[in-house]
Length: 195
Image 1 (cartoon, rainbow, N blue to C red):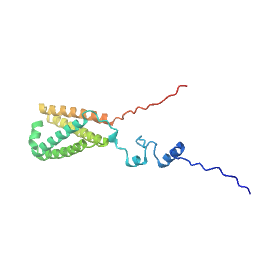
Image 2 (image 1 turned 30 degrees about the vertical axis):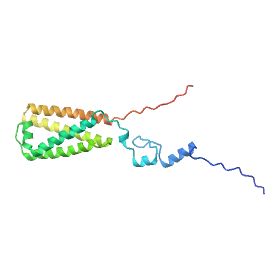
Image 3 (image 1 turned 180 degrees about the vertical axis):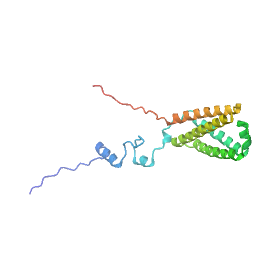
């Protein structure tokens, strides 16, 4: 029996072999798009999740708006808790039970705590939920105030000012929410060869 000499073994460099790298990435499950449309460059970023704060450009004045809202909600909540009858009389020019105004103050204080948390976070989802919470509160407050004023047949200057300020705050909050929720368009450089 004669044995044929075997050719020398060539070492395969998997780092430079494109097909091997693609197979490895496919086995690991990285490189493709996930449910959110994100492309993960490593298994670590896929497991830990991408932090949205690094890719988000905040609208101009967003943090100032959240700060103003947090301060305003906290102030009104404290006034409603400490001086409930004066707050109600200022808007509706009527007297009411203190318990309902204090309950309103407690709810408003809870929302203001959410606003304070939204001020100090860098995550897009939390900021969006903060703005959505503010928008829902302003919408409900506008509806309740409007219905109450129509039922009582009152239209004082302070009530009209309150309604207008609620609408203005709602519009600004929804604009920030919309702007923050938009996806930024990524520019891709494609090289086209001339045929």
